[in-house]
Amino acid sequence: MATDSLAAVDFGGYTLLENASLRARNTLRVDARAALLAEVRDIHALPALLDWPAIRNMPALALGEGSNVLFTGNFGGLIVTLKTRGIEIIGEDGRTARVRIAAGEHWNDVVRWSLAHNLCGLENLSLIPGTAGAAPVQNIGAYGVELEEFVHLVEAFDLRERRLETFSKNGCEFAYRDSRFKREPDRQLITALELNLPKSREPVIDYAGVREELATMKIEGKPTSPQIAEAVVRLRTRKLPDPALIPNAGSFFKNPILPIEFANELKREHPALPLWAMDQTHAKLSAAWLIEAAGFKGAREGDAGISERHALVLVNHGNATGAQLWALAQRVREGVREYFGVMLEPEPRVIGSA
Ligand code: FAD
Ligand code: EPU
Image (cartoon, rainbow, N blue to C red; front, side, top):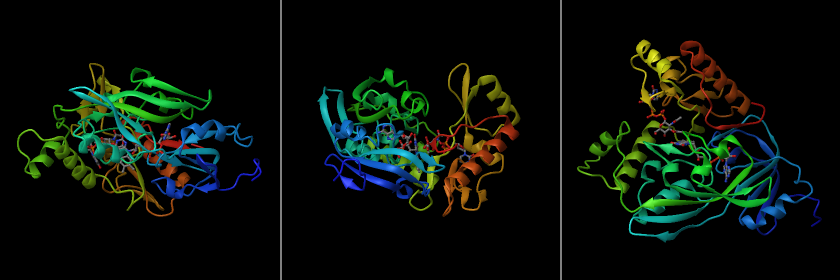
């Protein structure tokens, strides 16, 4: 085929699709399109892909399973989705195993693989949707654990410099739902992670609901990692709407971290507001509580809605467009700001004219 003609074609290490539908590629099921989409099976093919004359000057965007994005319009550039696979132990001592994971792996498969290999730490991160490659982007976290605790390094293809780079844990600049990859989007395409996973560990079960769930499961004494995983799966299944049944992107806003004086003042005015002290100067507040108290839980504008189950989850009841979902999110944000003087920050990447 002529090299300047781009159709849906397999080029060996990657497949290229023109005018690709993204509807099945984002968990909010927004009907958007990408000018080009490459499914990459071999990262060594990346330089050749990016060297196409038609692609060289296009914006490029990494997309995993689309569980933390909102497309508010079509994307006029190249979307790169890594389909690479592989999880292996590359070193170990008596206490820890170092595990290398290809970016295209499904995150929950990584968790299940680690438990099957008697490795600990990832149990609290069970059932988080998405790929391993996206996990460092917002430093995924749940039930008292964040990914960063286990990161040895992150390997990424620098889309500007066109070469592989490695980032140490410190180099990733992790924070709550944040990292250098989230702050400088579309620069690094994460290709692999290396995690240090302990062979034993003190259970992390203080997050609200975990002990109660373990008690319901009739687990006495110190729970094992697979038991904690099961408790987390049960809690998540109950609390969060399943994107396969009602399209959503998980929490749509981050829990706001505010100066402690302001947070305490809000707590005095609203004693039921959940608040967690972060350090001496800052506290995290429950965005879900603020949204529910501002009256938005279960709200609906056409097919765009706020879940009846969890106030932090924006849902698509059918055919909402990205722009309609974003408009509702903006109204929620404005409502919470008016009620409480707190500006919520979206958690997912908003792609388009946000
Ligand atoms: P995408 O949505 O495809 O992409 C997310 C961002 O990462 C985008 O900016 C994208 O450009 C970038 N990206 C994707 N792949 C790469 C790559 N290889 N290299 C560089 N950048 C890349 N998150 C939590 O932290 N905790 C939770 O408990 C949690 N629960 C959720 C529950 C539900 C029901 C849903 C739908 C989502 C939840 N999320 C949660 C959010 C989401 O699952 C995570 O952010 C996940 O890591 C996103 O993975 P993904 O492959 O779908 O990424
Ligand atoms: N709450 C309400 N109304 C609701 C839901 C919750 O008032 O409709 C209050 C409750 O008081 C509850 C508190 O909010 O105790 C916290 O709720 P939950 O335990 O569900 O946690 P969250 O703060 O809403 C965060 C993460 C989730 C993660 C859970 C468990 C953020 C933005 N969200 O949610 O992550 O799974 O904790 O650790 O930090 C995601 O990032 O997409 C995500 C789902």
